[in-house]
Image (cartoon, rainbow, N blue to C red):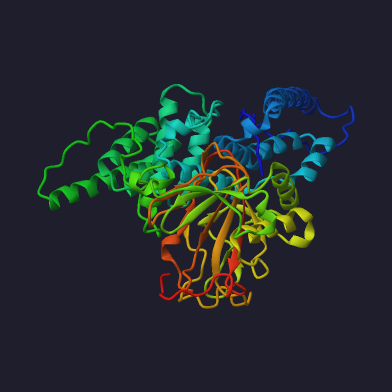
Length: 542
């Protein structure tokens, strides 16, 4: 799904109009003193009325400002949506805007009933992203930041590889990014983004969030990263700005005592913390996580560590492939290129036409849902944090194009698709990825495909249905291969040896999309029905 972004503007926060209790009726024989009180009461009412009018005018001015700025931006965004929507910062700001700022605007308008606006909001709100979506978009930016080693300033200024149009993050955007990380106890990213908010704030950029709030989050996050001297310096800055801050004084004393205790244990004298310097991308080491090959995987995504040597390249060839003289390929054989020698991975050119791609996307878009993985213990499909994309499944009977694509895969591979899974279409948007995984089930996952009754996944046929401006490669961490998307092409490899044993070298990943939008469709081909098409070998690793 492609997204577009609107520029953030400040929304005035207005107090509710003054409400008055019902006034009793007074006769003219009312004492003069009480009548005098009414005069002053009337004066107060007039003043309240003026304040109400001023509030309404301020509200209308704010709404007009929104309308004018958004009108300019929507004209710009709709002039070339493909280019405008490709920027990941834009996607994050849309999530943030529709979940937060538009709600503020709604509250502003609700102060004086406006049926037209509210009814429109009610109709469209069901399509708005929620808090989880905004959080997910923020995490996607952090994922890209880690994978492609982009500092927060590059993101903030919109300077991304392959982008000619920048989308900037404001002080408040950076603060919200940091707060999202902080709330997830991700202090590494909280530090990076709070530091960027502080940097832009110190440079004089306009902001709504207070510097005290930024320093509060930043100092504690730095402490959580184990940097006590810097936490002390930042907390001192916070105290200097707001001496009455409810936590700053206590935190400062705690940090200073803790540092003093640590230095005494090391037989070192207590020293004044050095002058605080800006925190850079490499100031702190990113904490390890559940993925053992993360560094290799992310390096391959950046194009680092690819083990394509000149000797290996000399063993790669291109050829015409007729599917062992398949009648449908004799007159127009497929163009086949070797991508890797062992395990053997090949790419087929012109595997899908533009019209076929558009038809497949047209059929899939209404059904796109959060992509799932098969639980190895139960065999049930479920969502997972390591796979971030939208997917849909299409049957051959639904449209002649799907039937034709299935037949083409069978012709090219020589394997039957009668026992294969449905054609899966996946859309990877901003930060979309699929971390290193196996397509086949391992020995400790005997029930992974039990419900299908077609055996293990013997092979994978992956169609690339779009080009990707930056990122989105298919990488194999075990042997250091990186295969880049090219619209209309397809790659194919076997997941199992002829013996039925899994080829563990085929553990692979879909790198996060940095710029653009990635569409793929894949066919997982199973063992059943291949007995005579791919006979068993003489050894376990044939």
